[in-house]
Length: 406
Picture (spheres, rainbow, N blue to C red):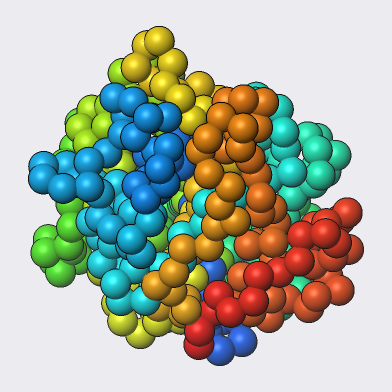
């Protein structure tokens, strides 16, 4: 079989290897100062914040949510956090992190975007601009240079290709578990021979194959048999989160990673303590536990995970037993480096007069304030870079103090 560079990329993609290969850069992962780690999880589709973090102590909660209201006692009861806010009963592992003071919950939070398009909302969430399509790269990519990762050494997307948030001038890698068999040794030996005369491409190939081997080792590790598993059949996220955890924990592994979970656009038959949303939350919660377990205490204790969605959903259910696109919602910050055990919400209530446009939670906190806080206090990004280069036109979104504990 004849191989050239184009054939290699095409073949590698089919075999699940191209997700970690790019002929333009060498991915030699390096540690940030103090070996800290940052993970960003994007929940695509607009998670219902009132379902994930029910304000069960609000006098208008039960009436506003109707059939979607979660009980405070008995089967399907909320996990109480502070007597006013709780977590969905599906989020058992997140509740354990809260009890361990490793989770901060945010409510009435949103990006600067105020319309209700998934496409535009996700663009603002990932680009970090004040409105859609002002910026062409991602805020996390722009933050890599101030973190000391300007050469692309240390950032990894758990995806077929890096999403917008991690795309930009700094070259980054991506990884997904292979669906088809890995390339055999004959194929690899021919590829090595093809690139033997090009030092840059040879180094890039070697680094990519090392990452693939590390990832495969993580997936094949016998210890993984004792890790939490997804229930399957409903978007099992566990292999992705578990693989990410192993890579983040590895010596010389990435220090910045992104993960994605879709399926939160619950217009129809959303359900309360059971139903499609509860099943999706269970899959997410199990995957988070797998990430935690795979990283191990040493890496986890230096990790902060930010989890956010493009916007919230309507306060009142619609006529189809679901919720429609809204504005304010919920976000999460967790990990061993987080000073947790609290809910941060500038709460205005769920009475009709308190709702934006008579239907949505009003956005009281800018998501960029949360992102700035983690970049500054967890990853050492200077304030000047946050205000000018990473989140331009965001001076009003001041970083939130006290979120990182170590």
